[in-house]
Length: 119
Length: 106
Image 1: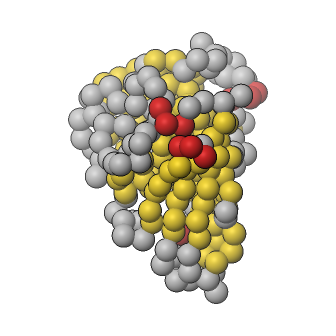
Image 2: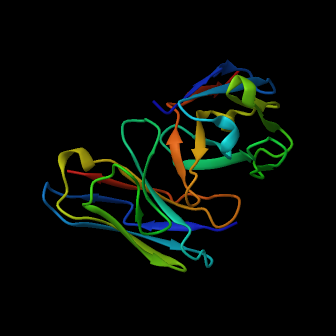
């Protein structure tokens, strides 16, 4: 079964750091662009970042540029999101997402991991 | 950044109804518009990609149309499992923005 499973969320103080992980199964991670998307409680979806299949090319939303870093270890079948200088408005469910190998669409989503930033 | 607007923001419908949701882009995005369904706080599910292509496994009662800046998602004969929130998303250029969502309920 094609699946993405996120982990690493939790409660963190403002200014703190967290690293999210996303383990891929049922497909070859190194063949796909991958993304992180978040959703604040009761709000809409916000795209954060994408990584090329080999991890050499990355793009970020302005809201997280310079604070978040996307990376991957294809041998371990895992995508990461290092989050630094966290702020209360970073509180959200974070989803790991696969880019389809047809068209430009997000065809597989993880179940999400919740990050809460609060003092 | 490309802005997407959706209308309506919410709608009430009944089983068997035909439902139409529109998505408008602030800039030309060719065919690069996707539609997702989200239920119960779970990760969204891809329904339609490239404006009108039906994702594998998605029922044929879902269809998409449009190009350029104006797009439509149509659900013919709404089923109980279709009550959810629907989002459009542009994949023309980064940042890959989403619309604000349309909640479909009874």
